[in-house]
Image (cartoon, rainbow, N blue to C red; front, side, top):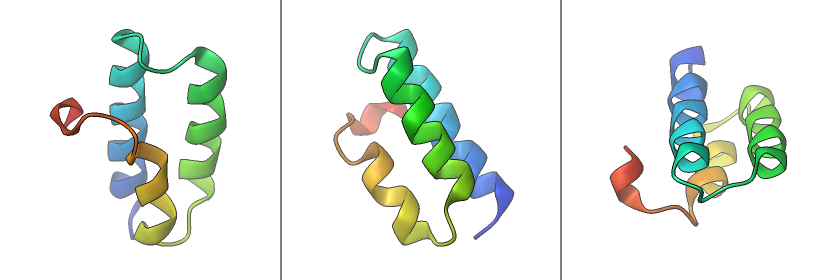
Length: 55
């Protein structure tokens, strides 16, 4: 897994905030988790409840 993978997830989370799908508090929690992720499996739950059209 690379930093680019983490940044991709954070970008999706930013789009979710801009569409009103996540609060800033939810974004902050998930973004921290994304940057701390060690595997792709750690990243998957962070966007699992969001529509696929965000990416």
